[in-house]
Image (cartoon, rainbow, N blue to C red):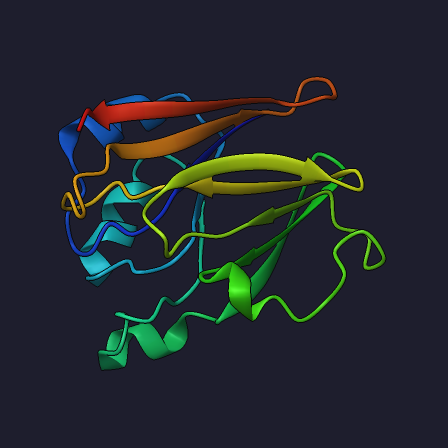
Length: 153
């Protein structure tokens, strides 16, 4: 199974992001969606799980949870916008991965058997950072995690 992980679109779904996500079976959006149209467009590619970020303050966004659990292919993902708000121990809770956004900086690390993944920001460029998303291949462990640069700094 191939999962697309995107965050911090802030109302902009770039054509490069849509192309990069083609062929994924599932999309996880880690918040700061910006507009409901982003989720509508992503759902044309694959099923979407999304959480609310700190800029998702309009009434439509109240339907988005602050955190969610995604269970797929026998794996459990805990999704939230800001990793600083993590209020549980992922390994003890049985999570294989924690997906977050907020910082606009792509990052991946493993700690105590748990993958921590931030796909960076796929929306408007901020802070001279690259515009990125992530692709996660679950075929075998350790999972292949690819940070896809959509727009270099």
